[in-house]
Image (cartoon, rainbow, N blue to C red; front, side):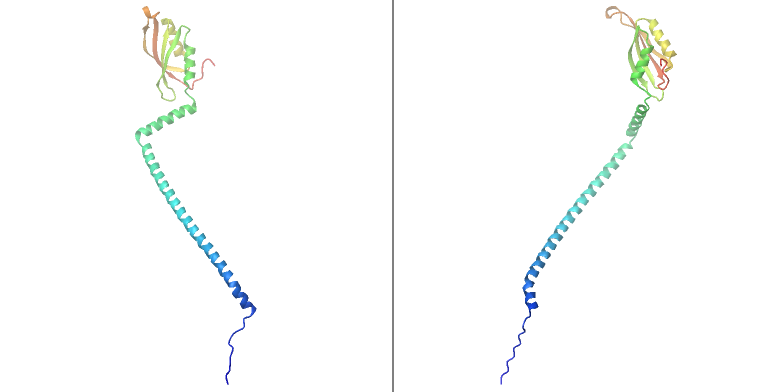
Length: 196
């Protein structure tokens, strides 16, 4: 007698649905894996770009530090130090407003008699706080020059009047002869004005 055995297993519904969903789940998993791989590659490239940018910034920073060191060495040179000191001195005078050329010209013109005129004005020495000023004055006669010198010596704004040169200019074909005077005086910039 022959016995026939049927070893086949009958599939239930869950097994049939699992098999049916396996293909879409595998496709979805592959898509998620591809997205993760793409994101990882993009992040890796971005990381390399950031590292390159950081290396460039570090290189620029090192170059700027070298340049700063070089400029600092240049500033430490004696001629630049002297220029910086002179600039600071001028800036200090400007900030303190102790010396004004227009104010000085106004004060000197008040000391001139009507028959004299200021022909030149120069800063002979800028020693603070009382700079030395040089005047060139032209007048019609010696009396006007003496009046100017008396006014200058009597003024509260000026000290240490020194006559450098005095003489006659002009005459004959160039017009009437005038008296020329060049003198220096210490200008006391902080002194109160006598006319005010």
